[in-house]
Image 1 (cartoon, rainbow, N blue to C red):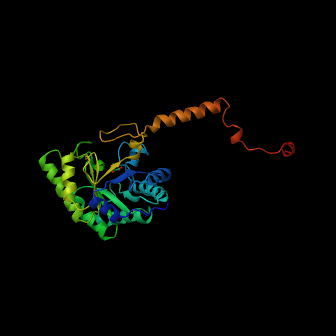
Image 2 (cartoon, rainbow, N blue to C red; image 1 turned 180 degrees about the vertical axis):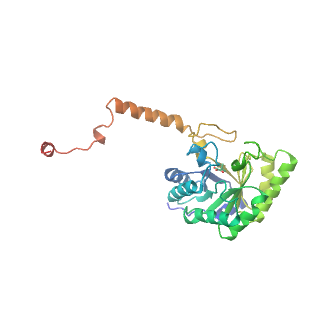
Image 3 (cartoon, rainbow, N blue to C red; image 1 turned 120 degrees about the horizontal axis):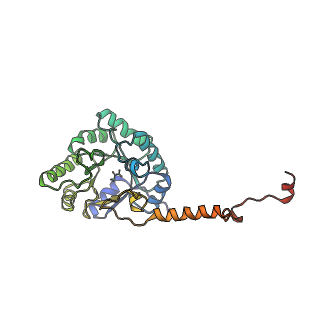
Length: 277
Ligand code: KIV
């Protein structure tokens, strides 16, 4: 059955009704198709692709070209989910014009529905400018991986009253600037719950507890395809990595033993034609 593509109004309505919003990352066509078929509301083409599919040690080296390339593949595989392209480090920090231009590339070339960028009150003017240009913006506060060095590493944010207040103010400034959604990463549950109550727009948590309007996880963490490290907030629903390795070992053995390809995988020609060769 053909399903109607998710819109920002659908996401707002979910918050109003108290039904949870689901989000997963995807970086390629077949994954996007599976996430879409599973009925996940929103797909984030996260810059986490730098770590989980390109093998970088952080998200910092990810380029606009890499993001656009993967966003195109994801949107080709999606008919239902609302797709958000993640703006990579230094694609929105060097000036408002550059930020609008790069956000525009996600929409025009990547054909996604919205962009995401990291930061608090300090990025509100950039958010406002991109939204004014007609592009919906999702923001990302708390642990912001692109600037993790400045935060002294991958740590829970907003654990003391002052930094918690800063995060509440940031969320409000970003909403005022026109953001349609806020991702909150690695913050205490009580703080995420307060921000969720105080905002009109939906909040999506990752390591922010159960009271957010929705949840996001990195696809490769969720299905057990990324082994380098597993943060506390990840739940692995299946361990695909070892299953795939076992299947590949079986393929290797069957080739080495002459079992594959079998008759059913083999093309034939008539004996008469073969004799004429
Ligand atoms: O890049 C990403 O996948 C993200 C999510 C973890 C929110 O920003």
